[in-house]
Image 1 (cartoon, rainbow, N blue to C red):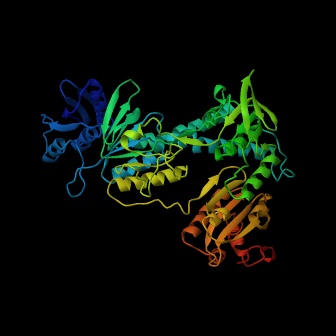
Image 2: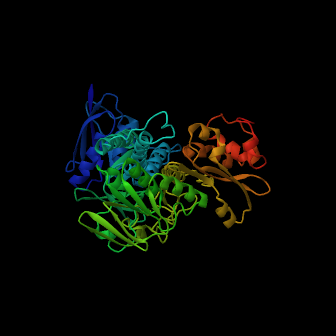
Image 3: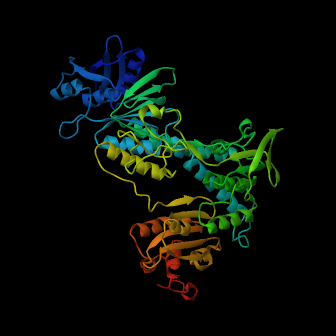
Length: 562
């Protein structure tokens, strides 16, 4: 059974306003239809029986307008509904305070986490997105890249494995178009399930499609796709606009049809020859994936692979890549890039590199330049990243930022955690983000996983260390797999033996690093780690064995010696 509800709307200034209100009302669960008239300042709503006026009025309020109930024969106004209406639809905190209006710019990991937590804390949210809902990770980052990497891994195992003597290899046909369709299907599925669907089912969040720009410290101007503009006044604002691939200043490069990671992941074909400029995480992950799918890959690294990490990491991965036929050119830069006749020509100090496609993956730049941050008093660093404090607060006290547009590490789980804590702080709480035990994983094969200090970082901070490196030929799981590429390294504080860092290069290093993170978080010593029970024939047991090397020769221990 349907009921008719009529709302009087205040604050609309044009027919576009009416359209925004109509869309917001239509998105409220239980609403069958809505029609909004700007001249009459009125909304006619058809809703399921029992639908409260409160979420309708709240949906209008998130756009910056006020709504009140107009009595109708079918639904007399209750005192609560009238009160909500006259208050502009703002929900209430305990104690009678009006709900904060939080504007969130972006819709990725940080933005979504913040929006949902802000609603949970009693705020109303306007989420502004200029592009595809979901941001980088689900659309053009973590999710599609890991799918592609996994497919490439399967191809590699079918072509070559340690068990070829008993399981004869057979080179598979790679149908890139079908793999891409499978990849993008899962991307769309996750985008709907984790982003679009959640937004649609949360009435307290209004999605506004367009590009946001600060007019002043309390107002955003949003340019919509239809050429219109919309003003959003806010009590608090979160900037979570992410980052985009950065283009190095190589002469000629900008005039070529080069790939960024986005184009590479969305390509329906495989180049015969692929050149990769960069040694970033994106560069090494995609380089190996394309090589395993059948491309001849050359990497140009300005320094070495993983030059910011422990040198052993770069050496191990470089050896693994070269063993697979990937050409790694260390200390090599392109001084010029040309494109003619369907071929890229890269000029380097070591000669020319020719390729059919060129992937440029030299890092990502924060998406901040179009926001007019100066008008809001928000400071950025030399790279354009927003500077934030431990509470994710910017230089403007009521404006917060999180994710890849800030000076925080560019990981989606860091972004989401920062977004959650920003929302807590925006709504009166006090939450900080502790990154001292932040794990990181690079999904090459073998994987690279790190947490805490490297030796060099510890020494830079004046910490004396005691370290051990365990090669994987001492780990029973690796021996059983006939794959002993890599190592596990533990960094302890000299004297106390407290674990402060772990670096691992191993086929499943990402699956063991969280155990190391927990050990560091709980200030365990290497001896305490060595005394723990680890299941036998797991890669994570390598942490125990590495810890035992501080006072034992593990080669002299039995397989599962405690």
